[in-house]
Image (cartoon, rainbow, N blue to C red; front, top):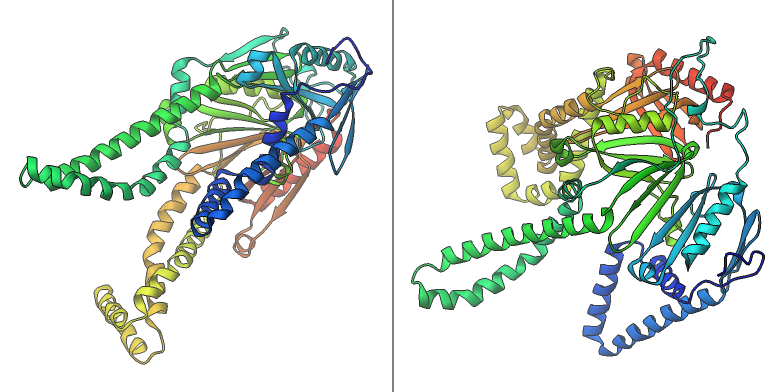
Length: 556
């Protein structure tokens, strides 16, 4: 692994076996739910047939053997302008990656790697949804040498390949906008998180909701505790058994909440300790982690979309979360992870204030999109058509009926259901439907679903109204920002020249009202603005396509 020996085939550290074992496990278990289900199924099988327990050591040995074989057949070679990686046991792959295609060098250090001075390097390119090349458990010197070679191989900026922050932006009418971008030095630190910020991240962590779900699982143990305490309580405190049981339940719930908060705070400190964001030339780099230290590097030109979001907790703290989505990111797809590959890294700032978010937007978009905003409370956001409330109300109410159908069917299929339906008809003043119910024209289930749908309309209308108030859009000559959300809020912003395709669609209701929905597909996903005026949506589509065709700047 000597960086001074280019051109020779090299093997990584033997500690890379741990990396390959972990990748093998990931290929079989894509999520925590699958792991729990697997262990649950094994527990049932072992209880019925103890001989099945022999599968566990055999499986562990097979996973270790797979990791050793993958390490054995892994080779890489660094040349002056490219890197070659050969890997695979049965299915062999050979990667030839030129340095000028590499746009990000991401580094991850586990606790053992940091002790041994090793790192795992991921090479990210512009046109791939995965990290094309990975070098597990190599020395820090080799990683630094590889980073230096990649930087040295990048050509000087040409006229047609400069970032938007380096040239003046010109509108379609030929007028140059005089906006200035501050000169930046290499390695300029832009943001650091303090201990208080990490505490806020822990309180706003969504894992608290998952932790609360386990309360129902552990709730069965309350009965066991109560049965054990009841004799003791009856002997020590006559007549106080019920009170003590209530106190035990309350204490258990409080303890569980405290344990969940502690677990969430611990996870936040492990992941985001020492979080630092800085700029190096045209790239942005983040580094964070207490035990496992992770570095993510994303080239500015590869960023396709900025997403600023906050939930209820972050909203109370007046903080936001920013994600810069790169090209070739494929959200909500697990195929790459299932194959043991790494999804393209996202430049994420887990906590920042509104002015800091706007400053980062200005830096990342350069001289383009100067009139855009990532802050959801910006007055310049325009609301979509109020007809959106009507369509969303209908969708929510119908969805509630579909969800309630199996429950209402079980309640209303008996004679008691018929009597219940008669009572509901009397209370609601719809007794004129009683003959239809008596003659069997309308069954109790159908009538119950109909009444459920009527009752759900006011609630659905309220929810749709709240969602409509959150929906909005804002655009200038260079880009567009779309706002959405319900309890929290989210703003997606992008530059027009980054668009891959633009569609304008109409539902039957939109067609009657002269409205349309704008769909913009980027290399990292899709931005949708619903219920726009048809003329506005069409003009935005045409202008966006014009910007894509006429721009001299690269989209990645």
